[in-house]
Length: 133
Image (cartoon, rainbow, N blue to C red; front, side, top):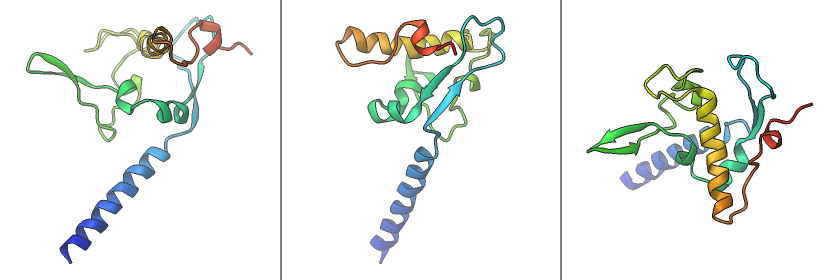
């Protein structure tokens, strides 16, 4: 009887977590009115495509010092799911990394790493992501 209850609880937890992940929008537009005097428009981001290829913690992060070493302790239920949850526009916060710089380092940096490893990757040039109408 206990094993059945444990099984049902584990199954419910898995369904809840899967529902949370699937509930993420498939595609959305990354743009902030905070970026004044932009030369290019925002970026359409395909979350599902990235989710199928890489681990969540490759993009989402919350680094803390653990025994003198930076460790990513991000948790999808932490409320820190968007770059703007920690990074301010000009980086006047604990990260010292502005929001636009955080986006660029995270996105382009990953794409460049994949390219250098000879792996299939997304766009690298500005105009490939920031498509003018």
